[in-house]
Image 1 (cartoon, rainbow, N blue to C red):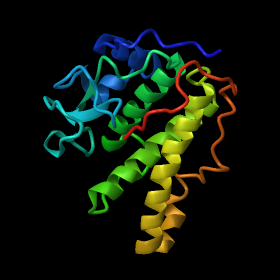
Image 2 (cartoon, rainbow, N blue to C red):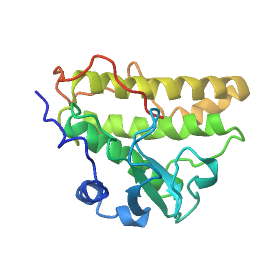
Image 3 (cartoon, rainbow, N blue to C red):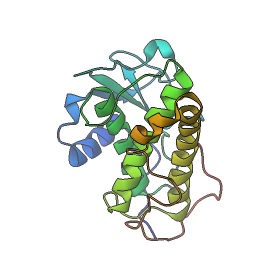
Image 4 (cartoon, rainbow, N blue to C red):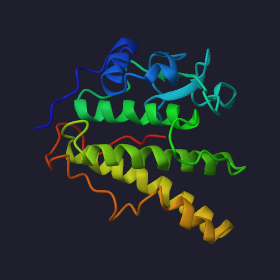
Length: 210
């Protein structure tokens, strides 16, 4: 059985420790890890980036800065992870936020672009981040995810991928030759070979992320 995460009362210090263990350079992209306006997370979100001093990842006014060298804060919640979650899932979600922070600071050699539509921009950024952590999970970077968690990660990627690809194919189909290099087909190009197919403790239904 995959190892369960260490309780539901997540602290900023715990997240910083996990970030430092995976990415010693995290402070180049994340200025501070802290709680938001509430210690309880909104139903649609585990964690999120905000501009320095911001408190609500769901408020556009608190949205993160983008561009070369951008430095933002990471908002987490005491109940970011349910008690049945594995340690591997916690690492995956924290790595997901690190990817966002580094991506929007132009720290990766992948496109950072805007499409003039907030929903499309969100789908693009989320698809990129989920593709990244799915590849890392396949390499065993986080340890063993549960079956439910593996399905959830794949589902989240597929949702954002499908919406973004549909937008590109309607707006400029030839552009998919470019973006498709970074976003593999969900059903075939990304596998979770690094995560053993084991059942998880906990509910059959899983919460949605962004």
